[in-house]
Length: 114
Length: 110
Image (cartoon, rainbow over all chains, first blue to last red; front, top):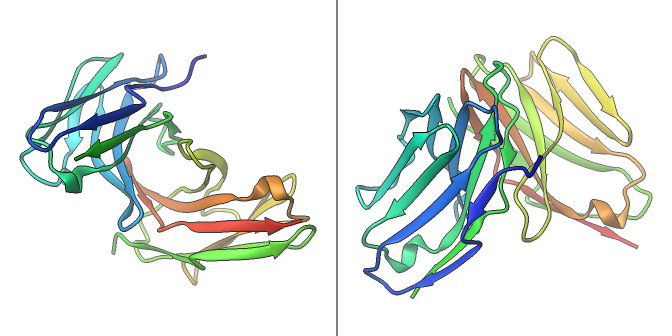
């Protein structure tokens, strides 16, 4: 099993540009989570999908952020327009909803917005 | 009520010593308490987890102690090794949501 796959691993962009982060969950998992990690705020849940449907997006910081899950094997997190304060490591995680939500994290995407 | 409070923020332990990290929660609806371990440049990975119907769970050198009445749980690492140096996150699950603690950066001195 390849685990959760995220791309790109590193992204450097300029303020105002659109950024798209990608995630392939573990096959068979039906829950997918997007997190943001910074030194100041720790690990924050941005949005959670179950069976491809967004369940809780209360952690999405503002309208510049959007996430989609068109099928069970792919999800995107888009930031448009990006700002320097969006610089962080973004993690995708997946789990099989068995009531105890053991989550498997991807390696993360380190985003730098100049 | 959704917070999970973790302490200490950082911890230095001598090789062979016991590392102890504490967490407290407020929401009694939480029904699963995992600990995640994160190495630099990597995503967090599940280390050990406990359900509220038991007071202790041990896996090798790692033990979770759980006090349901006090709404507290802790991670004990016995015979701590330099390879245990990492950031540790406690977490609590409610329904299908997971709330993470703020993390503890553990350093094991050789």
